[in-house]
Length: 190
Picture 1 (tube, rainbow, N blue to C red):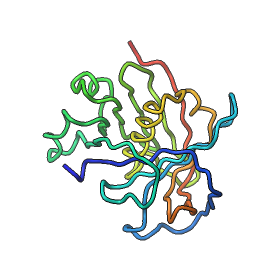
Picture 2 (picture 1 turned 135 degrees about the horizontal axis):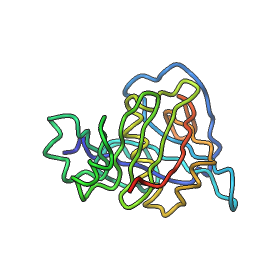
Picture 3 (picture 1 turned 180 degrees about the horizontal axis):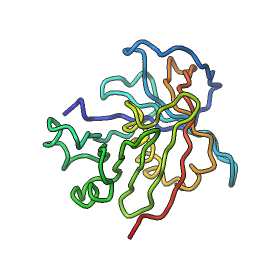
Picture 4 (picture 1 turned 90 degrees about the horizontal axis):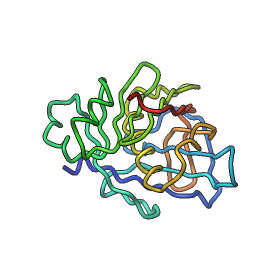
C-alpha cells in the first residue's frame, strides 16, 4: 500500500523561492510540486504543495497523507475503495458514484484533466507553456492539489484567477518550472 500513499506538504512559502525553467531533473531528484499564487480577493500568501512518498519528509512542514489510485490499472483494483483520489480515462461522475469514499476523481484528457469533486463542482485543468496536464505525473499531482486545497478550506474559485505553476521542488529553495496550468470551475452536471 505504501506506493499508493501520497504525502502532500501544503504550506505557505515563507522563504524566497527561485523559479527556473531547466531540463527535466533526474527521476530520484524530481519531486512534483505546484505553486499557487492568488491574484484576486483578500491578500493571500502563495501556497506550495510538494508531493513526496511516505518516507521522504525532507524537512518539509506537516503533511496530509492520502491514497491516490489509478482506477484503470487492474493491479490497483483492491485499493480503489480506500482511495481519496482516483485517476481515470473515463467518466469522473460515474467513478465518484461507484466509490463513495473517494473525494476527488481525475479524468486524463488530451492537454489536461477534468476533476470531479465529491458533492461539488467540476474543475477543468489545462496545461500551457510546456506542461501537458493530462500526462504523468500531473493528473495525480493536480488531484492531490485539489484534495489538499479543499481540506485546507480554501475557496475553490480562488484557483480560477490564481497563477498555478507546476514543476519540481528541490532542496527547499528551488522550483524547476514545467509550465503553467489554467483552472476553470463549473457546477457539476445534474
